[in-house]
Length: 236
Image (cartoon, rainbow, N blue to C red; front, side, top):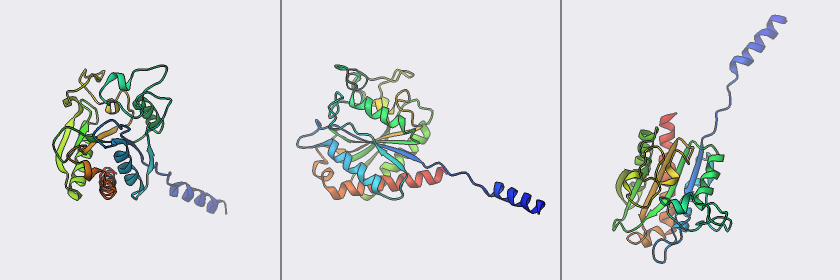
């Protein structure tokens, strides 16, 4: 009996498989309402994020969005590449961007996806942005490329490829390591997620009506989620 009990204990130990950690995804839709005529980038980006989150399979998914908060400055506006709109403290308040990144970091995400709409491009297109000089630059580029290709394949949006945030050439926020102009939400000194991409989906003038169509928002969100799932499956 003693030998049988020992065998049973050993079988139990060797058959035990630790629970697999659920992938954590953070979505950061734009909170900007001051871009484009008769156009809310916040509303459009949020609708796309909600469509992506609702698309199966579900991971541990969270949305960080400062829209409407009164305890922050630039909660409904501002630029992701401007010091005054990101790192500055105004009247004791941190910015909408800073708050969103704090919320994201608390979740310890594996993947962080920011959703925006472009402007002034004169192109009905989609772009992907990644951080310059990042340790995960190759992985970020691969994911961003697959996401924008997926959206382009199911919509009329032109695939304009993946660009480095250092090429935007605007405003004054810089990465502390490279000294290059950067997107605040993609900076590894701000965002602890290893994988971080930013999508500029359409143009607020050229794609004005297209972006505000709920059917298109749903289609874009679903395409992003499905491409993300495929990319994660390849990595695992």
